[in-house]
Image (cartoon, rainbow, N blue to C red):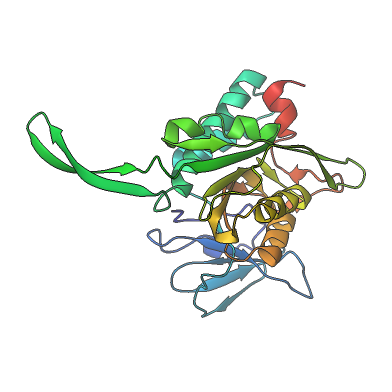
Length: 282
């Protein structure tokens, strides 16, 4: 799980050091809360306490236990994740390298998200030197991967190298550049997912939140509960996380980094540009 969260926020010099977790062994569980004074207030939690940081870097502290019904956001601190995010950010990164970086980032995020979540089966096998107790991923309960086209294809490209048994269902959604509202142009979801199905929903950019909220609602309509969905993204921003938190308690989000701003055109700043265009060169 993630153990340290480092925001790209403008913190006052006297508080900048407190913008990261002091306990590297504890998972960081990020939750967004409504605020009448600032709708983009970000809260992140360690196992001991919860700190609130606004985009203006104002911070207060509360002692409050983490609830299992809250939406949680994980930003794994692995150096390879930071490396691939940095490659994606670089405007000079050519299309083939960008797509490979997206795939490698997705592989790492899915690895982190699948920890303690995959169904397993135990038994014994004969090794060359004796009998060994073993544990395998249960192929009778395949995990579903749902990429949101088209950029989601690049982020989930290496999913099968991490997950031994998967089913892939494609979901095509386009965002209107004027209204920023999503429309569905392709839906290959099954009529109903089997009870208890685990689903990775893959969308590289969580910006305004319209597309990802619509996608989660579709999964719910097809029988998947909030706690059985894990969202995988390259970059996330507060507006999208706010909407997910308000609508889907129990949802988990795994992202490479959280950026603080979404501009008037719906792009994350500094972000990494249009993930679909940069992945496929068009």
